[in-house]
Image (cartoon, rainbow, N blue to C red; front, side):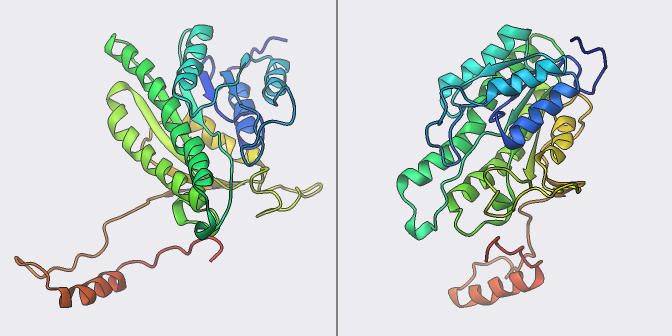
Length: 305
């Protein structure tokens, strides 16, 4: 079946990591529906990063669904936090369709525990898959775009990273995940500032949706015959627009859930307390700290506190 409709991403080559289930699956299908050629990356691991139960992961089913709608897609099983495998994933997109246009970083898993009880392996594995798993593919993608840009081509590269409310506000029992997602939010800002010169826009999304990472923890089953605010597909239109040639913003992080979105400003300079052209005394510092806090906005509460 050949697709004849024109979409907002018609002909764009898009990598979606962690695209076998949940948000990533919804994003891959949404990009394909808008005409993109999609690399469906998924390692097939469990919710907490354990080895997959099945010999064949969920990515082939997503590819089959895209092909059934008349789109083009391929399976990729790279570990996105492995430097060489991330490079091979980008190369696979370029080898298949001649270029890469959009990278959507979404892969991740949870190993929740209170910080006082968290082990080194739990910290390392979660920060690795989220933070390094965003940087490694993006680093290889920018190498591709920089080469094209320096060769005189007008590049319209897009990177969409996945942060989280936990990364923006904190989340009790998820310190490893929250720290990694906070790092991703700042990586958006940093990469946008450095990569705009090559025609690359970088943005982030902190989604609020029902997935295997949130189901049974934050959300129950989907409602029957009713608007499902937490359907992962509700986040995908924002991801597609940010990954399209129509996107004209960069360096911003958005929260998104069913039918609504908002930009998040992140860290801001608060009220300045000064003693003029001299050094604070230790006795003065406490009062200055309390005054700056009192004159500034109240911080958002940590999830679960």
